[in-house]
Image 1 (spheres, rainbow, N blue to C red):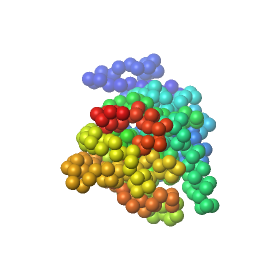
Image 2: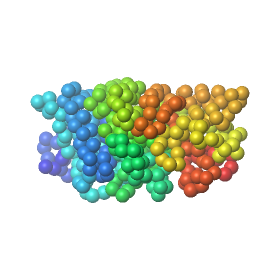
Image 3: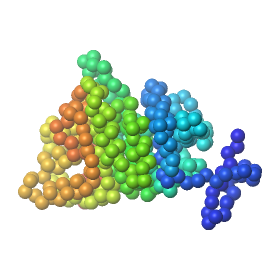
Image 4: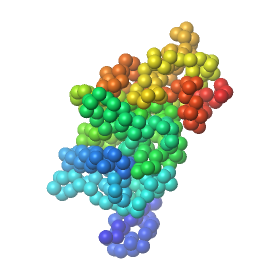
Length: 397
């Protein structure tokens, strides 16, 4: 059936498509908040049906409680099928169901131009007074495609774990063989469109990621370590995400408690809530530190700094731990940094271990890369990040 679309401006209906010429065309009303789940599942998560599991949770949540005046929309790119834009609705029987808003041809959902088209479709087909965004897929933080830090390297770690049953994790963006660079993600997302961005993927709780997305939303929720493939407990957090004042600390708390109640490698969760509007001040404070202590950064004892990844060469280090080992307690820059970090990280929780393999002794809520001298291959790539330009730019290369 041809969908009829109208938009209203100043009380006048503007014709968008010829189908609107038919009588009975209805205007798509704006919800108080449209929550978009951008679900890129043409990968191991999709083939293992974790996208279906999370969608079932959303259907359950909507069946239990009508999301109105909010709206939930899913852009789903599943394994082996063409993407569709779906709305989660509550039918007359009080059961959650999916309604197709638009179908797409075969496309790379991680192409910035494709993402921009989808966001435009959401604004037209499921408009909201405000918007929230969940990014759902694999991810490796700032590490770009071709860096050698991939899903397969973590899977090899799983295979070498002494026979322990290791769960699959989400390590934003894998669409078949395509991945999305952090700079492309930032370019694809309009400034100021979203109240918040929640990232249901691994390793995105980085200073590099938060700084790249600082103008894209007011707040961000992400994990500094791996996220188990089951992802967020969607049935428990929908009401928090659609609330007039989003309860993002509750989203973090419920995510943490959902996994903290498990055992073995399945008892894995790191989560934090960031005020992205304060990231510029944090970057300024870090810039003053790198300007003064740049020559000592490559000499930091990586074995003594808290890390969150299971790579053979660690790349995700606790930001506060790095700074505390770099800057003497007598230097006022340390206190200045602490004040800025506290203004950014509004909530943080971590289990005692990550995947039974990484012991978490300290957790400030945010990780960062350290450009060690023997990381020359990664350092060259790191120099292309916005965080590097802001933090290291004043101290030379």
